[in-house]
Every structure is written in C-alpha cells, then in structure tokens.
Length: 182
Picture 1: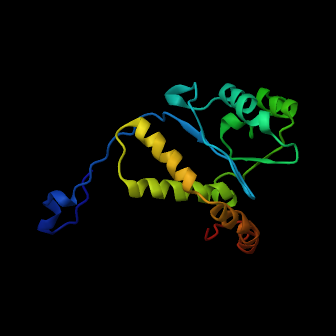
Picture 2 (picture 1 turned 90 degrees about the vertical axis):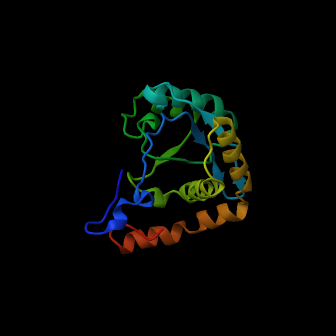
C-alpha cells in the first residue's frame, strides 16, 4: 500500500511506502484465566474449523479436558461472544448442555465490549510487550515469548485490572451504554 500526499515530491520516497503482508491463518488459540489472587497456566490449542477456527466441538473438548478438572462451582466463567462458546446458541445446544453437565456457570460479555472484561487489559499488556520484543519468524519462538510475557504478569497487574471494574460499570451507566475510556 502506498500512502502519498498530493503535490509533494516526498511522496515518491521509499520511506513513504507501506507494505502490507497477508496474515497467515491463525495457528493457535490461547486460553488463560485470571481471578483475584489467581493466574492460570496458558493453554494453546488449534481449532478444527477452516483456517484453524475454533468450533463448538473443539470448545466442548477444551471445557471437558482443561476447564472442568479444576473447576470450582462458585466461580463464573466470563466468555466473549465467540460462536464456539455457544453464547448465542439455544440453551439446548450441545455446548450449553456440556457446561450444564460440568457445572460451569457462564456469563457472556456484551458484544463488542472488551472494556468490560478484566482479562482484555492483561492480554493488551502481553501483546504490547511482545510487540516491543520485535518480530518472530519462528512459531516456537513466538510461543515461548507468549509464555514468558504471561509469566511476567503479576498478581498486582491482575488486581488492578479487576479493581477497575466498578468504575467501568459506573462510566458505562453515566454514558448510557456508550464507549468508555478504558
């Protein structure tokens, strides 16, 4: 892609050209859990859908193999509105029936509202740290770097993210559901 202003000679300089590379299909999904005084290990998995997309059958297996074994029924799993999570499906769907069978209580975030999910701030921090490390050309190096940056996330970072939730909700109410500065 070339971005040039009209009428200036500088627009033909190579420094004004941007090259856009086609992104490969997603190779992993990364799952991590945070809570007050808690941070899980990361889990990497690949979906069976087109281009590595997560499908409901993948999510069911993940719930059974990763989430359920250590699940405390007093907890609530906060999910985004990914189709695979079954948040938009009927209560009788296979994924929702699996959650019920495993005793996993879920809440779904409103669509397009990552600002209401405390882990999104943590992911943003991890992604920024990865960006500061430069480009990774090897998938194994990228995976190691993601794990290293996740390990650097402190409980204080998590507490800060969670403790802002009441202020976020108040801001949302004050703006009648509009965007909030988080």
